[in-house]
Image (tube, rainbow, N blue to C red; front, side):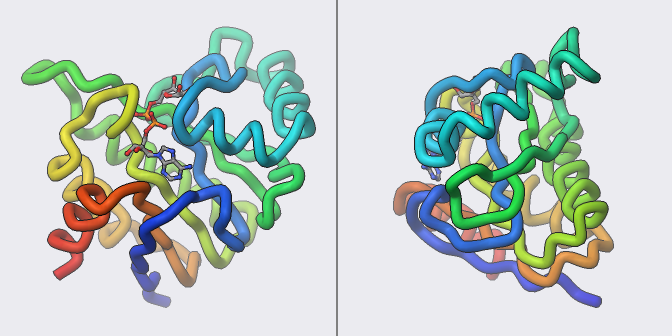
Amino acid sequence: MTTTLALVQGDITAQSVDALVNAANSSLLGGGGVDGAIHRKGGPEILEACRALRASHYGKGLATGQAVATTAGRLDARWVIHTVGPVYQGADSDPSLLASCYRESLRVADELGARTVAFPAISTGVYRWPMEDAARIAVETVRGVGSAVEEVRFVLFDQRAYDAFAACLR
Ligand code: AR6
């Protein structure tokens, strides 16, 4: 089955999907940007689930490029898939780690049986990955993954991000 790629400009926490992807950090204990918005709107159940995951599996933190799911709390979704994007480091950056976030998130989504998945533009905020490059990596990776997910929805916060993703989809 082919996965449909959709683009929306807006707030990822307002999406109604099976799974929302969170641009988290390795602590899994929250932060700013998308992460802050997801925890604020989803409520304390998500943080509780993250703490439990840390205690059981990720005492040293979730590695960059990996993904793990929790409840979505009060969000209009069944799961939040937390993934840790790479911090942009200019020429020393490793695009395969950013690609891995999309691939691993979709692998987790498949395991869960999620049919609709919303992604933010991972690593393009606090982690400073240039938007055009991040958009290309995101679109190419999702297109290349064989997943049972029916719809991947990229939810872009502003016009510039939307335009960058739209250019890659054309
Ligand atoms: N919905 C959709 N996109 C958003 C939203 C939202 N509500 N809020 C911000 N964005 P960032 P990162 C966009 O910083 O770069 C956190 O503190 C934003 O404009 O959320 O992967 C974590 O805890 C940008 O384009 O994630 C980590 O420490 C994109 O989402 C660190 O930030 C990603 O920005 C992760 O940094």
